[in-house]
Amino acid sequence: MACEVTIKTKNIKSTYFQTPTIVYTLRLSYFSKMNAQNILLINPWIADFAAYDLWAKPLGLLYIGKFLRRHGYKIQLIDLADRQRWGNSKSLTPISGRGKYHKTIIPKPASIAHVPRHYGLYGATREQFISELKSIEVPNLILVTSHMSYWYPGVSETVKILRDVFPESKIVLGGIYATLFPDHARQIIQPDYLMTGYGEKQSLQLADSLFGITRDDSAVPNTLDSGILPWDLYPRLHVATLLTSRGCPMHCDYCASPYLNPNFIQRTPEDVVAEIVHLYARMNVQEFAFYDDALFTNKKHHISPILKSIINHKIQAMFHTPNGLFARDIDGGLAQLMKESGFKTIRLSLESIIPVIQTASTNKVSTHYFECALDNLEKAGFQRKDIETYLIMGLPGQKYSDVEITIRYVFEQGALSRLAAYSPIPHTMYWDMAKKSGHVWDEMDPLLTNNTLYPCATADFPVEKFMELRQLSNQLNANVKSKT
Image (tube, rainbow, N blue to C red):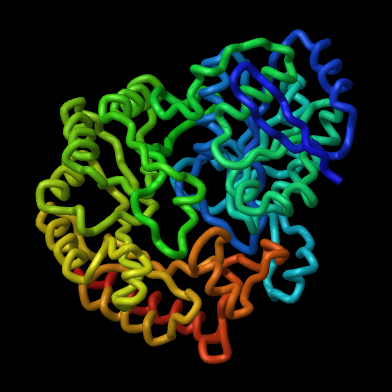
């Protein structure tokens, strides 16, 4: 059973969870013998039926690395999902851009054994991982992040290997899964310490305590958004992901962003551009992916100055937006800046044309704003057939016809539909709705929230109907792409 350890630092009290039970004074004694203050950052395997790389990087982990380095710690990184380093399913040579991960087939966990699909770990092979671990300096402390809650078997397999190779190193688990399902994570992963929420200052406080460092951290902020991330930790970097803000001003009923990121904070345009210029000029990065939840919010004072500066710096790069953009913010001026600065991949967030779902989406878009955005982007030189539109399906109470008419509406507008299946997430209104209808429960295995399983399917809207909708979307998208 996990026991709770409270570490006191000057003017700050932080609580961590230790498991298994070991005398804490022995842990401090172990660390006091260490001269180096060496911390290893780990981005674990993805475990799923399918996975596709959309320029992803473990930004939360990199923010922690930047924070710890700024306070004097030596950091190392192993990103098991770095395709540019490990390769993909067709080749183990370095590659860039988006694409398929290498997949290692593993047995399906019991709770999803009924699913007739191959299950696997995505990213580096086990041999690559173990070889890399044996080649680096032994870390005193290992920080492991987590992403989708239903990917946790990948975290578990990662931690098992870390225990085998570095039995004396202390392991900390943080990230989205650890924050949304902390009790499950403690029981299944059994880290030495588990952190929920923002990890920057928590990691510093824990490391200082374990290494016996005395620091007045009363003036140390909880987070640090400014500055360049430690991209030098990547041996090869052709694509960089960017966050120009933290959190989202919207409070969609199905999204946990307000819980994971309670405040919406934007970096200064100057700070964002400095990072882009550094990556482009000094590290030869040619592609950037904005991963903001609300990239265009406060556009006159944020994204517009950023794009104008990119143009003035004569940066010849491609910019991608894998997260959905708010269509209502795309006026003619912004669309023109997007074109001139090099936007390549554009994805809009529509979700649905059904009023009740638009309300659940904080009314961030309407058919009017969507059509205006398409018009403005087309006038700026983008082709409608290259613009993708996120549509949500599988919400509790959502009907087949709700999704169908939205798909057909996007087709009529000449754009592409991209269906996003709903995954129930704790601490959201729609989690409570799914709970009332019996689709989720408090002690459920997070694997059952996997959106590819369509957790909220019903007799009236069964899994087969979701497959029909995907076929419809694919068919209509093919018709759109075929137009000259």
